[in-house]
Amino acid sequence: MFSAKQRMQMIEEMGKTTYDVLVIGGGITGCGIALDATTRGMKTALVEMQDFAAGTSSRSTKLVHGGLRYLKQFEVKMVAEVGKERAIVYENGPHVTTPEWMLLPIHRGGTFGRWSTSIGLWVYDHLARVKKGERRTMLSADETLQKEPLIKRDGLLGGGYYVEYRTDDARLTIEVVKKAVECGAHAVNYVQAESFVYDENGRVIGVICREQITGQTFTIYAKKIVNAAGPWVDILREKDGSNVGEKLRLTKGVHIVIDQAHFPLKQAVYFDTPDGRMVFAIPRDGKTYVGTTDTFYDSDRAHPKMTSDDRDYLLRAIHYMFPSVHITKQHIESSWAGLRPLIYEEGKDPSEISRKDEIWQSPSGLITIAGGKLTGYRKMAETVVDLIAKQLGKTYSPCQTKHLAISGGDVGGANQWHTFMSKKVAEGIAYGFTEDEAKRLVQRYGTNVDRLFALTNTYDRNKTSLPLDWYVMCVYALEHEMTVTPLDFFIRRTGALFFDIAAVRELKEAVVAYMQSYFNWTEEERNQYDQQVNMALHDAVIPCTKC
Image 1 (cartoon, rainbow, N blue to C red):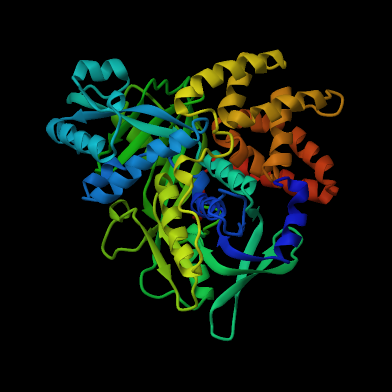
Image 2: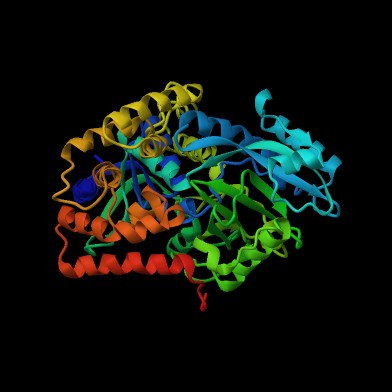
């Protein structure tokens, strides 16, 4: 049961149930914990204040990567752990994660020298147990330019060539929470944890929640409560009276998107900037996106935005490494800004603060998980649920997620993905999609694509102006992915606001109209959602001047 129409029914049921585990936070960490807990036999619930993945988990660099740069900070254990996790994430969801060869150019006077890069990548490969076919190769200057001719030639000594894993971070999160629900968890979005309920001994036993659309409140009771709220974890610790000791320090990262007609990047590149930071430039879906910045942040957690300083920093980085690409601010089609909830280390610059995760437990019993990286979400969840299992004092199954396909990922293993893709694309063409449309659907939905193909039977051009592919995506998002607002669909279910913003402009009225009919919105509600989409379109391009 993960339909938007059944959401209020789910909320009603949650108010009547006592759970083993209640997770607060529907980002990748919280969704991973919910999946781990429910597959071990724990009665599990999850609430998310916004939409699933609306915070950090839809605003990353969209890489499941091993953190090469953390070797410079001697974070060897973290690199080893998350490096190994990359392959597991890929194996369990090959439709949302794929290996991507990354080029690391080496320039005279740059951050990385030829020898240190070779050694660093060798250590990286061995820490992460990278399979032989994906281990690093060192390139000459000519070979580096063959891989990517746009790279700065002046002072070029060569390059390192190694594998990272590209992902759709929001869809990865959605597929994890869908799998948790398939396995028995109860999960809802747009439900805010407002305050805690305690027993006579001061132990936390429940959460008073507010449903964000109707404003109604209800209480969820659970034996163990996990605070996995990302940038908001300290706010919940304050409500619990336990925000002492180590605390979060938020940093902001911004990415910009440029059409390949203006920035025809062939190859993903990881490059250093004049100030010593590292930036990615990655081709995707006919676009090139570049990021990320790294600055301390103390403003609105729910709506971080690109500023003109962020934009100009990334434009300077592009001009520095790709001097023949004459990109201006007018070429930026879209952008996104995300927050990293890092554990504060006094005196360190944003890019120097460790990305390690930590678990804290308050006197009330509230468990908080903070820090960490997208790549390590499954292992972080395993550690949290191990702790919960021990404290509950019952015998539960060991962690089940290492070899558990997420929703849409059960294609018989990652090595079967291309065979599956070819077969399903052919089926999609038979259902009336173009080859490109069918490829996009299979890549986005994996084994769930059959449900979208089946929806073609309900398509009526007289009832909607949506094209067939957008129609089936919209209906599937509402019926199977608890999509509540148009922005849920345009940002977190499809990524279109970032990588196909022209389609959002073209189709926004049709999507809002369809959702109005589906939810029976009033004209006032429809206008409200129209305004939300228009504001998001504005914010994606126009820098914030008051951030």
